[in-house]
Length: 259
Image 1 (cartoon, rainbow, N blue to C red):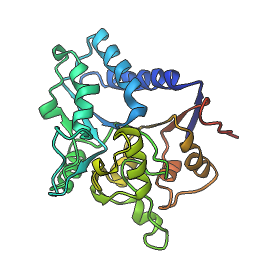
Image 2 (tube, helix red, strand yellow):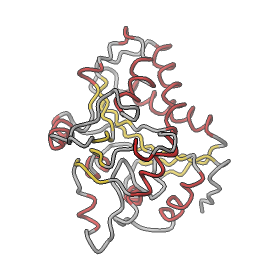
Image 3 (cartoon, one colour):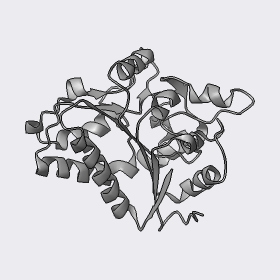
Image 4 (cartoon, rainbow, N blue to C red):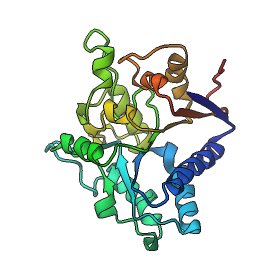
């Protein structure tokens, strides 16, 4: 595992954009499955990545994106794109619509989101197309990755948690509170209580993982991760056993000391 300390948000965004861009270009025309995350952390990265892809005229006809999660409404369906917190809406606004159409990326067929009605179908499609080549991650203030929330070790084994599939989950109070503050203008009622999340099994099977952290509140889970071992009580800790994971964090807000 690589721990990379950078000066600030701008440097983190540049580094992440360069790594993802290089991975996409290196695919050289073969299908490339790219796992994507949302949230404020990724905004700068997506702006820079789109600019690099557009400037280089990179052929994106074989790029397929797989988002980590999507909110679920009271009807059990994915929230519509008209919902202000829709992740499909987020991706369209911040990446998909910014890509030059001439590059060949077709959102309707090449952008994939976990479906709360058929979460197993998401996993089947990923497995049938070779799994994730590259997965981008953030880390929740409680240590979750995607919406894989912590579970007490008394309720699930270490291996059992690692094998969790894509599914619908109830969001923890801290997650709802955090997302309300960061993305919903402190309107708790706007944040759905459930989400469809990519499974731990699918994330951990990615050939390369990049986790970005730029909030002071992420110091606690990162510190526990650095000095701990895989546990369902800290989902991000499972990345410790992944051979190609890089964690990039900003020194201005996360004063983490790496041995």
